[in-house]
Length: 238
Image 1 (cartoon, rainbow, N blue to C red):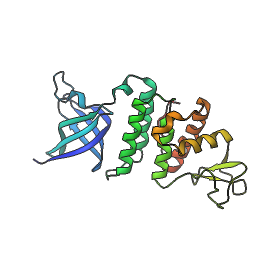
Image 2: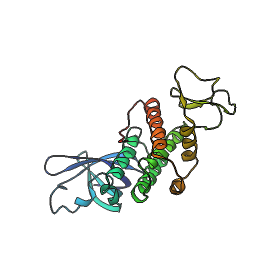
Image 3: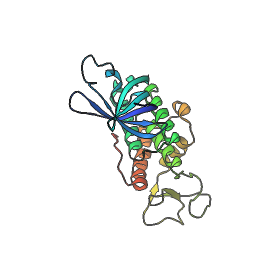
Image 4: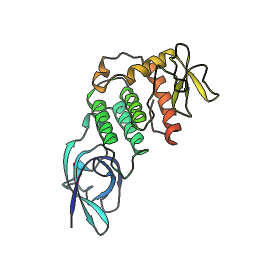
């Protein structure tokens, strides 16, 4: 009975009968892997601390009679501060939910590392609500081939000196001359906030000062763009 080792993050955890847990683990090596924790809901279960969503570590999985069974977990991070703060918890759930909507059973190291990085900053940085989520979504779009150009029109390539419009059909910013009926005018505050977040790395976000209103405006745009890009809604508590 061969044992495979995967570095991964539990992104979903459901109760099964006989005190078992069915988990979805997003792994660095193989993408999404589903496996079972046997008897893990018992009071004295040795893997009890390893069975829940947000657990990040090395998972040892055996294939037994067609089922993937977790035999051992070396925990790297449980992200406990997230569980103790409701705003952090919901933001982390949004990060996981966005990833679940686009992850597959093929490995994607870029997406895997992006998730872990965002989770760590939500966990250990005390930034404004959903600030990390905005940065994370912008990086998801860029990694999926939809980067945002904040200064040039994506249609004609000209520098945009006047009003800017967002075309959700193509996920790009347009000038007034190239706007279409599906385009939405962006406020200067949202454009400036988008540009700042897009150009700032996670470790520098603590130096950025944006109002709650501007973060909310950016998030609303990104959520709507996510739905257009991937055809799925993302869970967010604004």
